[in-house]
Length: 258
Image 1 (tube, rainbow, N blue to C red):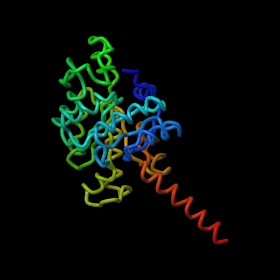
Image 2: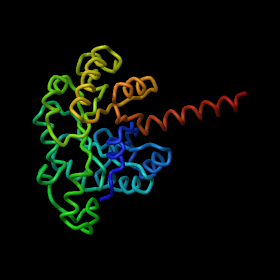
Image 3: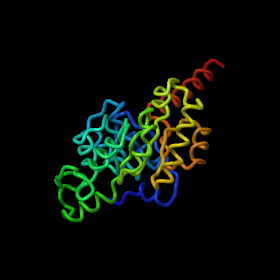
Image 4: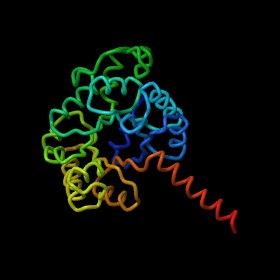
């Protein structure tokens, strides 16, 4: 298991950026790496990918020098185990609404003495048993990045308890789901959404954890990074492709008709 450069960057106070990736192609991950992103979130929650495809995308990330994170579909120990066994640098877990859920996420992502992740070294994460057992388990515990989503009003209300859980690295705020939870779906700039998020970011930093969120505009990125967000998910591969294609199509059509 290689050194987790993304975790190092966060520890050094850097702001890191990466898109969600829902197209099941290793080429997409390579493109994102060569484009300059720090990480890519291989999205099993909203994308159609299998874990087998995700593992190939993790390989591509290694080639392109970008950190692969896998977002699983739900809080589920076998899903977290399988995601990490691919060799991903971290796992991102949606819909964490209370301390008990955060505890399950934390222990599912680490081995003894910090968790109860299922033990098998014949996986890509352990270089198929090439890494000695004692070295691998210690390394995996140290290098794995555990990211939990707070994206509902229940999670907002329970944030103080959630922040008590050890071995949670990033508290990730989902503004769109949160906007729906507080009764204004899609209105991510509504004061109820922004106020709740700002309060959680401040508490997260005070607790010594990293804050993350999704930001799809330069204004949002500036707003949240100024308030201490370091882990910024920005854009989605399908949206990037659509917007680029739409822009090119418009230019081509315009040129042809002039």
